[in-house]
Amino acid sequence: MNAVTELHPDVSHPELRSWWMPFTHNRMFKENPRLITKAKGAYYDLADGRRVFDCLSGLWCSPLGHSHPKLVKAIQEQVETLDFAPSFQMGHPTAFSLASRITKLAGRPNDSVFFCNSGSEAVDTALKIAVAYHRLRGEASRTRIIGRERGYHGVGLGGISVGGMVANRKMFAPLMIPGVDHLPHTWNPAEMAYSRGQPTWGAHLADDLERIIALHDASTIAAVILEPMQGSTGVIVPPQGYLQKIREICTKHGILLIFDEVITGFGRLGTPFASGFFGVDADLNTFAKAVNNAMVPLGGVLVREDIQQAFMTGPAHAIEFFHGYTYTGHPLAMAAAHATLDVMEEEKLIERSAALAPVLENAVHSLRGEPHVTDIRNIGLAAALELAPYPGMPGLKAINVFKNALNQGQMPRFTGDIIALAPPFISSESEVHEMIEGIRRALRATPVTL
Image 1: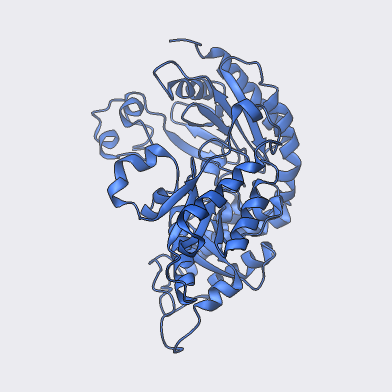
Image 2: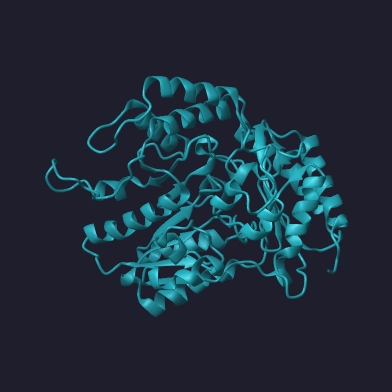
């Protein structure tokens, strides 16, 4: 029996009732479930027979498409050789070699990598490293973290504390870490609607960091954490000069700069990391998702050399950093990452991402003037459409556009009243154009009013 394909779309069905789905309108979904049964290349097969293009590379995490044979083979071979190895007081070769490979790819061969299992864990790990680093240097008063409005840094308690998405925070206020402040976000439709790439307006918004520093005093601030490009909130692109100003201010006041590169790491902007794309070096970079094409959960933090070395004090037999996870450096995740990086190199997929970026830009901006669309923005191989919401029903219009897009053979991502697009690096130019035309038809099929 194929339990997945034989599920009846009845909310009372036990298989539907039992799974409390994440970030999902569970009641609406279970009235008419949309079930994925197979994935190959840049496409998903749905249980009802539809085949849809993966417009967001999974959840920003599958740039090589699905079931790439070299990745499948690497995982199969690894599980037959070493299925699990503890990383507490023991190690295995592929974790060390992968860490070295990532630092070299980032252009920081002397730096270190701390592995974990997700973007959320990577953020909480980076926050711990930042606060502990200052303590080790005799500046234990530096405990405050500065995030940004509309920022998404996962769902750990540290991540939602420094994050700025209200729905992720409001129910959990009593649990959030103290000593957090937030910069304003950088999206201003009156000044930057329909920008192609980085908006020319808005660099001055970085100056608000000086105000926050003056309010709290630099001696209390450990780090600033930002997504170079805010992805989960709808592809908010940093204004020209904004990140450079943030870097200058952090350096001036001895504050660490953390780039959350869970989405932008490993090629989404056409460079290995967004740091290289924008020409701004962070002190710590979180990563996850594309590092191993989401074949096995994996995340990590790229750590500047002197930060890591600050921990290497005291007796050699002492543990330097009391932090880690059972699955840190999991052999299957390491094997999948090595295979992913092999394929990226052999097929020049980061370069392909860069080449597809202007194709996506020109195609997506052709949707200007279509029903519902109030803004279009893009950077690298990522774009978003801002939609006019139904009065009093925020989010419903994007859901309707999403459903109509499935009928057009396209599976985009919706968040609020935003449609996000980030196709796999393996996509052809014609598939990018077909994706946009499918979204165009979905917009036209969606009622302007209820």
